[in-house]
Image (tube, rainbow, N blue to C red):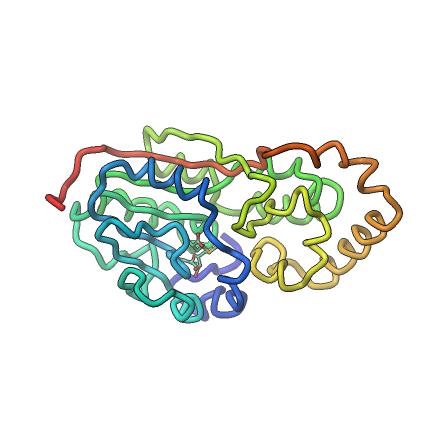
Length: 262
Ligand SMILES: C[S@@+](CC[C@H](N)C(=O)[O-])C[C@H]1O[C@@H](n2cnc3c(N)ncnc32)[C@H](O)[C@@H]1O
């Protein structure tokens, strides 16, 4: 890890970049359904790197763990109780929850191996959303405009690290619907103009953590290509698709056996 994502020392990254998160990052119902299915009949859940509460189960006994007070402040009224903490040292006793959930957060952890070991220590089952960076590297925004993202992402704890930390894990694809509501990096693959909006980019850590001038230059090129029709010449064929694979993956490990009576 290179960015000190919110670990045990210093200001949590999302205290800096988390402003307006809930406006851009609305849980997508198709991803929610996949995550709910992966949680199975778990009655008790710890949501690690919970942020503002996206994908947090409403119908199970849930506790959220999150280091950033800016993210905690954006949790809606009535969401699960939250404890300020980090994955690397979960304030949860051994084998006391049915499932641990970690959505798009492992890449921010200071020590992902330690965090994943913590998920295994506290929960019978682990459900993680991450991505395969070699697939993301082929996404037009990365391949043609911001290859710096691929360079940066190669240093992060994504799919390979998650699978290494969760022995026996099963991996499935989370396709990105053309109308996905969660503004992840790949969300706007079929609405390229969206990336020109700084408010959209702020809630995408792969963009907001790159040097500003690098992103500004790339966005100027994208704007010019949209104006000239060059983008549509190259990528217009994508626009009829309902969904595409940009590398997002659902990783499920551990046992379906519940440890709580729930
Ligand atoms: C992209 S957000 C995802 C939030 C939420 N899971 C979601 O899907 O919207 C990443 C979250 O991971 C949190 N985070 C960063 N470092 C962490 C750590 N070491 N342990 C736990 N969470 C961490 C950030 O503060 C942020 O809220």
